[in-house]
Every structure is written in structure tokens, then in C-alpha cells.
Length: 174
Image (cartoon, rainbow, N blue to C red):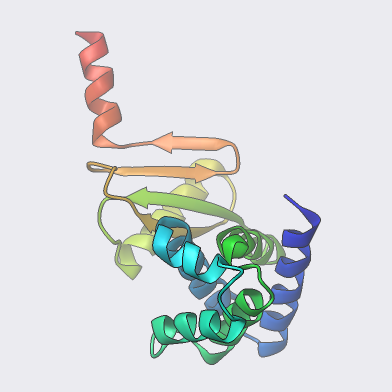
């Protein structure tokens, strides 16, 4: 990871600590980062060097209006206004990693075809902690390419419980 991304992640995390809401800001920033990473038009718009910074900030403010904390909106504006819109997803991932580490946890990225409820996410965190022997901060990514089940990544460990993988294993065994 580049020093620039690490520098922004450290600055964002310091501000989140000052706000007293590291988990909430980190979670929201992670969702915003994923939205930017998965939407080519949005990423292109907030990365366009020809577009004034004010316009890029306004695009993000409009998208986040009523959906994110003021602190999260301000941090997104800071990153986008500094010309780092293309790196927002990487910065958000680095912030999530640092926030989890500071809480004595690791990030568990879970890809699922459908959104998980808070209860499901909590139960999943408990099950992963029991299986892996570490506390985890679950970040759910809705991914339509996951036909069913979940694909979980914690550090270098991948737990693929997707229906596609199960079917492939069944096909290979037959």
C-alpha cells in the first residue's frame, strides 16, 4: 500500500478518534469506498482532474445526504477535495483495517448475494471468532456474483461457503 494511502488513512482515523466514533465512521467510510470502487461512472467523476474539486465534493455530498454522519461526509469531502477520489476505496479499506486493529480485531470481509441483517452479521462475527480464534469486525459486501452462501476473507484466510463452490466440489467428486 502506498505511503500516500497510508497517510490519508492515518489522518482519517485520527479524526474519527477525535470525533469519538471510530466504528461508525469506519463502517460508513467502508460502504462509501465500496460504492466508489464498484461504480465506474462515480469513480471517473470524482477522479476527473478537469472537474473542479467543489463539483466533485458536491457529487459526494449529494450522494451521502441523509445517509452518513456529518463527520463521514466531511472526511469524504477532504479526500475527494485533495484529488484522491480514485483512492477512496483503498483509503477506506486501510481505515477499516486500522480501526479493527486498534480494537484488537481483524477485518472479515464477507461477500454475500443479499444484504445481511444486523443480527446475522453479529452471529457471523461470533461464529468466525469461535472458528478462527480471533475477534473480527465484519464488513459485508453485497455481491451478485455470489449465487448463494458467503465468501469470507480474514487476512490471508478465505472461507468459501458459496453455493457455486459447493456445486463445483460436488461436480468434481462425481
